[in-house]
Amino acid sequence: MIKVAGYGRLDATGLGGAPNGGEAAPPPEPPATAVPDGCPSCGLPGDADDRYCESCGYDLDIPPTPVAERPPPRRVPTPSGHGPVCSACGTATIGSDGWCEACGRPFNPRDHVESDLSGLVAMVSNRGLRHRRNEDSAALRAFEMPDGSKRVVAVVCDGVSSSPRPDEASATAAATACATMAATLIEGCAPAKATSAGVAAAASAVARMPGTEDQGNAPACTLVSAIMAPGEITVGWVGDSRAYWLADPGSGADDPADGDDTLPGASTLPRGVGGESDGADDEQGRRTPSALLTEDDSWATRMIALGAMTEAEAYADRRAHAIVSWLGADAGEVRPRVTSVRPSGPGVLLLCSDGLWNYLSVAPTLAAMVLPDALEQPLAAARLLTGFALDQGGADNITVALIPYLPPGDAARGPLHD
Image (tube, rainbow, N blue to C red):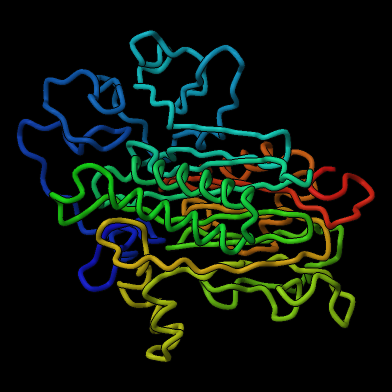
């Protein structure tokens, strides 16, 4: 994402992989001393006498393989238990100098991160195939309340690429928000209040990062969070990272005729179905359907909500995907939006950065990809979704967090696996 004067921050690649989502301008002619067209692997310019790319370690003596002959992108590397795994080649051959001995690329522990808290919640965060570093971050907590009931907290943050140190901003925000939400829940706060407290703490922490006072363009990131309690899920967000409710296809919640989102970036949960009023089936006996629970804090959705433009006009504008809310010293007052849902059947709560939803944003399709397996194996399902995004091009960092949910009294495992 990049900051656009007067319109917030915009993803530089857009959905089409070119600046602002439009046609990419032809690249400038490289200087005589530069490697023609840059590194074939990461695109970083280098000197003509360089043998290896200083960024990714690519052997510049090897001519690039024509695109038509390249193999499909690798899926997510699975940890082998024998040390860190290279996100480029999938081998556990990281040397003491921090470089992969198999493919020669530098190793960064944040290139591929996984976490699984006993099946209660799991996440995968991956650098993708085009970015030089992973600017996404996530944090997870699973714990017992003083009364013995269980809670799960998950936070996903996406660093704004055009800001300085976006990777640090996202890591700071995710860790701070998750810890604050867990602490305030234990103190007895309601999930909505805990969500607001966590976002406020994260916003303050990012705004106070060292060096922000000397830069007009401060470190920044988006945030989406979830608190799962028996019978209720509470979601909060700032920016365009998303939360989805994915219903188990076996529950009959999703209509096979459901198509794409009615409005890109807008919540698709039908009113009165699994909302705050009650968690029972609706009048027709339909369970809570798969739906996008959040609404992107973007220029396009804001224009549509104000009635200033039609959907077609707003999304045809170059400013469509500029975000109008974020965490950072230059964000002004941060006010998270908070909502809750009380699903009437089994499913999973998905939190993700735009590295996933840029390729797949339809809730019923996401549900069909990962359920019912995600109820028992959320980490495997998170790997599957991450691998899908990589196979589609991996143009951005990808972070996926999944929290399995079963209604209170479920005969199989009960609330939060009790």
